[in-house]
Structure formats: structure tokens, C-alpha cells
Length: 329
Image (cartoon, rainbow, N blue to C red; front, side, top):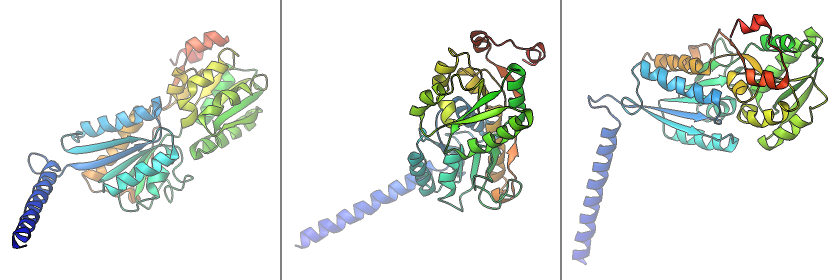
């Protein structure tokens, strides 16, 4: 019996030794060679598509340019929800449990998921059209909590006027968007106001999941003269499906951002999401290095929008590009 007690005690001592070694090893791994803490940055992105991917890459590159390099003095934990809200919640919970020093949320549903779980960890958002209407901040000018970041609000008025310029005879427009995306509803409301001022009628064409895109777009054929779709994440990810229907039907699509034009849309005045990501990185540096609080950091915007036209699509659907627009390309 005494022999067993001694063995048990020895086992406990060994266990404590192993735990101490692992703990010490963990501490060592979380510091740089000169003993500085390696900062942890968690990232939750709603879905993979050109705009959101560019925003993330701009964020990483912007941090690196400021001296925060992944794998050296910061550790970036990038997670993609693959378009599923449930995945956003699971990822957000992980990042909060990891006690990251900062969390980046890319797109409105991802931002809402993580903002609902912590009021202490600094959160930066990007590719969110109107953070205030999405209830992420008290106001875009004075956020007031632990959330701030950059908006991808695009020049909706200029986009609708571009549609009118490319399709002068337009009378009816199909408004294509996901009914559950707050940022899309915000932009669609803006687009409708512009259409009202120009005497253009419109009908809603909403989807609730990606499997509905082709059928909903098909239902617009013969009813509208053009389609407008904002910076909607579901439509952006399924833009190739949209163009499968619209291009053969010679139906022009004005999009919210340039990546959607690349995937089969006709044209846009859009912002540069890579630059938006870099702008968000600058805000992250202010938090991580300078100790600024999101509560006091107004939502930031990109002021410049670029014209983009898919000439292959224009030729396929028989749209003639005015010379004044060609001069902007």
C-alpha cells in the first residue's frame, strides 16, 4: 500500500512538472525573440468573394507595412464562415474565448455575430455599409462602444445614373438582393429614391439563399430593362450564376462593386476593397500600438470610386459605351 502511495505521489509530481513545462512553452511561444508579447488578431469573414477577400488582404498588408507581421510579432487567426450565419456565431465564440487582442469582422452578419458576444475586446469591422442601421454602433460619428471600422458605402446615386447613361431607354429595373442582408436593404432604399427622382420604375427580386438566384433572375426576363444589385454578399458570391441568365438575355446588370463586374456584370462605380482593408489596418494600428478606443473612432469611408465596365459583356448584350465613359477607363 505504501509503495502504491509513493508511486501515485511521484506521478503527481511528474504531472506538475509536465504542466509547468507546457505552460512555460506556451508563454515562450506567445512572445517574440526580444520578449515582446505576440498580439493575437482574430478574423471572421462571412464568405469568400472578390471584394471581401481583397479587404482581408489589404488589412494584412496594411498591418505588415506598419510593422505588424503575421507569424512574427502578431498572430492572425483567419476564419471564413462560408456564407453561413451559424458558422459566424461559432467562429465569433471561438475568437472571443481565445481572448484576442483585436477582432476583425468582414461583412455585416460576421460583425453582428461577434459584436453580440463581447463588449470588451476591440472589434473593427469592414465591408459593412451602414454600421449604425445594423445596430453595431451608437452612431457612425461616435460609435460609443467597442466597435468601429470602415464602411463600404458605394456611390449608389452615381451607379443608378450610370445605368441610365448606358441604357437611356430604361423604364423598369429589377432590384436584386438578399432579403436578410441589412447592408443590401440600406443600399436598395437609396437606389429606389434615385429611381424615383429619375422616373424609373422598379420591382424587388429578393433571394434568401444562393440556390434561388438563378430562378429569381430568370423571373425578371421580359419584365425589366436592367438589373441593379448592390454590394450584396450572396449575390456577389453567385454573380457567375446571375450572368448565366442575364448575358444571353441581353439584360444589363449594374453592380455595387468591381469584382461583380468581373464575374459578369456590366458596369459600376465602385470602391477599392483592398484600399478599404488597408484603411482598416491603420485603425487597428491606432488601437494596438497607440491605445485608441473604438468608442472614440468614427466610422471611416473611402472617398474615391472608380468606373469599371466589362467590355466583353457590353459587346455580348449590344450595349454601346459613350465616349465620355470610355475616357474614364
